[in-house]
Length: 345
Ligand code: UDP
Ligand code: MG
Image 1 (cartoon, rainbow, N blue to C red):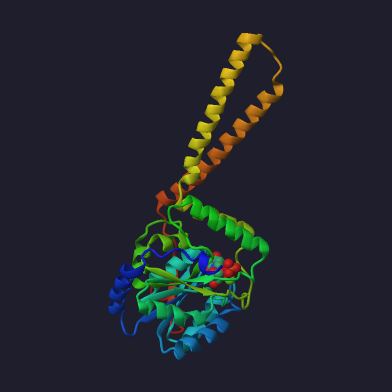
Image 2 (cartoon, helix red, strand yellow):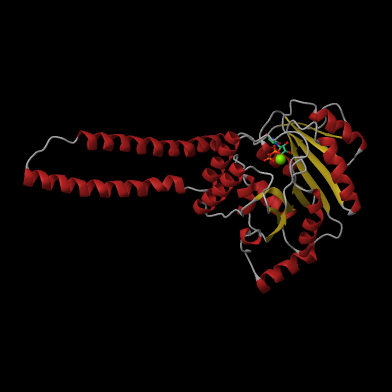
């Protein structure tokens, strides 16, 4: 089951092996690994996260940095991070000026990470840090993107699993870019792919889609997603729905084009019906009843027009946001070494 949900690799066989060998030979012997961690109201998770992850990184003798992005937390998150950074020089904190959402926070983190290899990670330990070692293993083999594939989504509710399944199906049916099923933001990204990602100018950062869009040789590593270690989820159903809508609309124009075909079908039906009515009037004479069919036609056409207008509105709204060209996030300050005054911007 898990393997069938993995997409076919872009290349296979000898061609893939040649590319991997080339990348392998270019890999630095002692790469810097950046963990990019967006945090929003996570005061209860910070200590647990750092105390779990750091020993693993030290054990594997990795060179690393922890880039936390504080996404406008209202609680004690920032001061706790800063106090941890006083004793740990690996920690850097990018403090955003308000809550910009996880996708924007991730973008900020990727922009500020210095590593040869980047791994975005949730702070709630739902992205198991044990996977860092196998991810790095794959990277050394020459893969540029290594993503974690959730096998059993046992910790999710049935409703969430089903809606996630529909989402992947609908997205892949409509978008020319395929996103693999059950893959979150948890993945390893090589510096080259991260640079491409950074150059994408769009404001609407649907990260899973963008990661798939950049291409490169990628491979999945299956894992079981555990429960949140502490704190509560920041995504309710309304937020997830909007997230899914953003994803589809920013990667596909199919919902726009569909109305052309709906129009063609309705026009064809209308022409046949008109011919039928005219013939009937010519043969049988005028016959006034028809209230029901008229009303149904009027209501149906009205509904279809509003629907299509709504979809055009979705795209227009996003066009408006993109054209304004406002920054994706605003950095209030970058903190390290336990600094308590806002240093460089
Ligand atoms: N997050 C964020 N900004 C937000 C919402 C969430 O930076 O507006 C972070 C959050 O702190 C966590 C990660 O994104 O590190 C994933 O969030 P969560 O665990 O709530 O999502 P779920 O796992 O329930 O999908
Ligand atoms: Mg989570």
